[in-house]
Image (cartoon, rainbow, N blue to C red; front, side, top):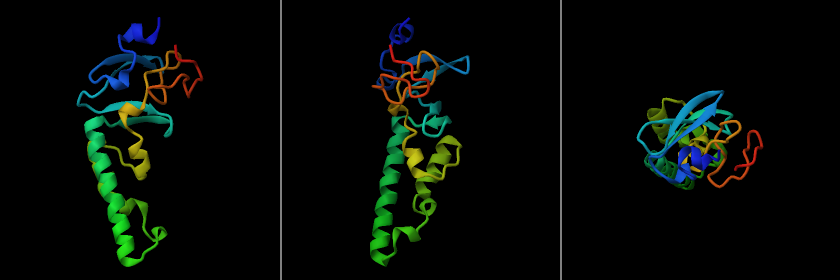
Length: 148
């Protein structure tokens, strides 16, 4: 049976509050989008399940990311310090601290935080159960099964 018939939702990431059932290691899992609770999905970049940010959480993290970038640029220009002289963890400490408060996970890479956005991922693959790499993906990046 096609994904949209099983779930009643052909574009999970685009419809807030919709539900989907998928298989991760053979067990059924319920995925809710934009429902106010932290969701865990397989991250194809990290190769593990990670907590994903909904749109409200992501907006806060995005704002902090921009502020950290601006502060770094201003500090470097003011003091003439090269980027190599500044540790990434210190430059993005407010962002990384807030992500840890939200998710309970310690992260050291601000770019990883930015790709843990729920709406970036597609529906679960019908073959392996892992989320597709994007809402428009036509092929599963994990098992290479075509999207039906």
